View 1 (cartoon, helix red, strand yellow):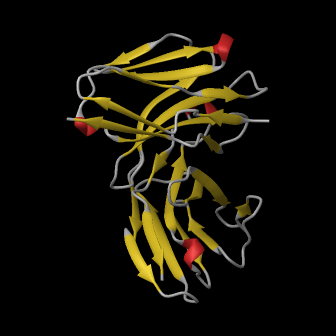
View 2 (cartoon, rainbow over the protein chains, first blue to last red):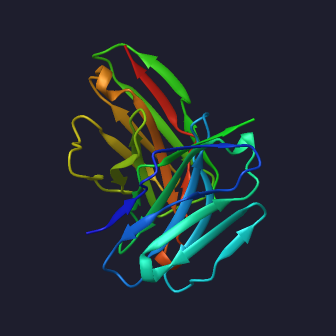
Length: 113
Length: 116
């Protein structure tokens, strides 16, 4: 079975704090892709990153960084020095075996000024 | 990358009526999908829109309620039929590049539907 778990329903932080959003996935396939999307209040889905199962290198993009660990089936997302504009719902997703996305339930991040 | 235009962006509809949502892509794509996001929930795949054949529906979704058209490789429509307040959701169109190795989904801006 394929599954994505985002155990954190909602997180509140004060601006400039660092915050990590957790994502744990399940799949039996050896080839798969993991994603993070941001959904601001306007509703559109903004693509943040894609990772394939053969690339465990961590990635940093500005204030964003991602930690992919196959040993724990986790793909966590860290925002450094959070800003109010980071407030959104963040979804972790998995593609495994087909083109269909399996989305986690999302984590609502509130960054307070 | 693909640019997706989804119309309408939002609508308020009376129960019992139907709404057709359009999804236009600026390039030919193999795979087009329709998702539903109920309030406060995650995204759930409704169906895969197949060009030239009937859509493939996920468990819990049926053609009579969500008829889908895919007349060509750049366009698809989703109709929400005989609407009830439970259909109030964001509906998103998604496209994907061919070949799993190049997988990167692109989403339309969504249609926020409220049924009253």
